[in-house]
Length: 113
Image (cartoon, rainbow, N blue to C red; front, side, top):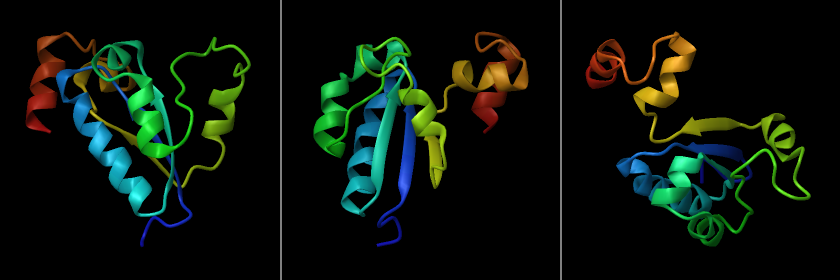
């Protein structure tokens, strides 16, 4: 079990492919990883947080403003063994490249990746 005892933060962005992140979360959990899921608002429209909670056995973070979880995002950022963005949409990745996600250039980069 290569993931036994590992802490994985799974960031799920909105897009039709986000349903595949459910399989990823399940497989990581089955391999012994502790998986914390962070959903964007768009992702939560495709796959509800309760789905990931059932698959991982852990609460899902959907907002910085959740009651009694105001600092949860800071805790998740502390020493994860692995952080995964899935699906890594152009809209999600573009800000780090300073390219608008809806631009033709970003779409071309995403297609090439």
